[in-house]
Amino acid sequence: MKKPIVHLFARQPDSVEINAICGALPDFKVQAHSYQHVKQSLHQGESILLPIQNNFEEIIRISAELRTRNPDSQLILIGELIPPLVSFHCKAAMVLRFEELYLLKEVYPELMHANVNTANFTAMHELQSKNKELEKINFELDRFVYSASHDLRSPLTSVLGLLYLLRNETNTTETIRYVDLMEESILKLDNIIRDIVAYSRNNRTQVNIEKVEIKDVIKDISAGLRYLESDEIILKEIIHIEEPALIQTDRTRIQIILNNLISNSIKYRHPDRKPKISISCRKTENNAIVSVKDNGLGIKEEHLDKIFDMFYRTSDKSSGSGLGLYIVKETIKKLGGTVDVLSEINSGTTFTLTIPTTEDALNY
Amino acid sequence: MAHFRHIVLVEDNPIDVFINTKVIEQANLGDVIQSFPSARPALDYLKDSEQNNLALPELIILDIRMPDMDGFEFLDEFGLFPESTTEKIKILMLSSSIDPEDEAKAKAYTSVIDFICKPLTRDKLLSINFNR
Image (cartoon, rainbow over all chains, first blue to last red; front, side):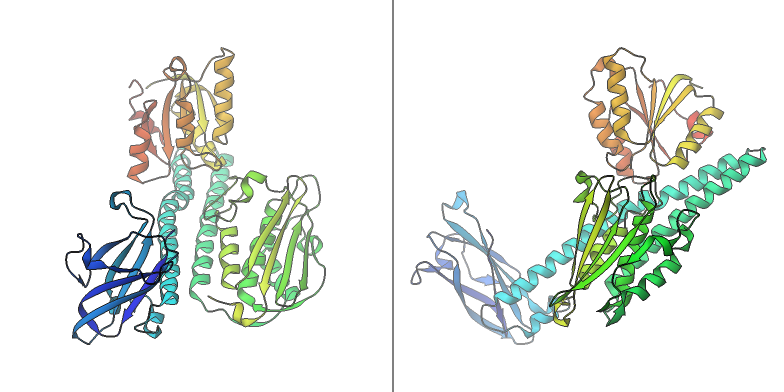
């Protein structure tokens, strides 16, 4: 297991000498430079591998002797415990890296407030979680570019294909069909773009907490979902709000979440029965629990753990972008909450939202 | 222009099934065009035909990005069929992808004769060497 350790220096040293003290035997000292592969003291930008030939729980302290010339910036010494390395015949080893803090402070401003000159575990954890966040963003960007190549181009190539056929078509009835299919493809592309914008807005905009009446939110959503209405689907008749409830949350975000869940319930309704969507809301000490239950097609168990993934689609029947539930997951995360799903194939699906109502839960 | 008795289309987007069928008909590329909305049922169909000694399609036109199982996963499973079956079937990849990696990856499969970027047109069909 990797165990991080970090050491900040108030002044800029030109080099540093390392003393590591191990936890299990507090008096066991490792003089870094006494090992043959650490021939000299550590300079800025350099890394060393420090093998520890002893049983220990963790490194409890790293002390470093600094030789300073330029006091302008802070430097950070990052250590990471790594598992036993066969080649070194030791129980574990530690990699120490020496970096300049001003390089990091734009990305990690909170590090500037870290307690300088003491081994600062909190700062390292912060650093790690920021790093994970960046890795996630990178991964999503890669997936996004790949998916954009396929999913954004797909409706466009359909339109191009239809245009190509339309040029040589003389039959008027067929011509109308081509135009209808073109419209369908363009609406699909428009939906994908709308979803991407909603996703990006969620990432960029501040959370704004106010008193929100769920009933009002549903009313606004229904207005936007009019296009899904037909003889069999009259939104007013199929959506039931079990208890008009007032909750403290971000109105725009709860609307995005409920809009996605409700439109899914309508898109994936069961063909043999009248769709029914029940929305209920209850409160616990710190949370509001909102559930959206439908009597639709249900989701196969094998898909359940993937439905919240970016660009995941279980079928191409709908005009879905594969982003809807991903947006739900990301948006509820921004509210500090969670989303859970229960589903039975052919009988229906229930999404349960747990939304914190205390402000300190909003950690994003 | 080549002509096939039986063509199988593996394509999840119904609009593209419509377009591809029209273009294949207009180019007179095949007599029977059979389409599958996803990879799994198409593989099941091939397995069934192979085991019961039924006629196999001569050409498969395969999309890449599909829910559940994508075109590459299809090709991986197709490669597990006996050679006596795979050598009789030509596969043409048809995708909206403009990622050169997808094209290179597809062409690395021995059964794949070519890669076409959507939309399918008569001219694109004419430019393909089906006798590879």
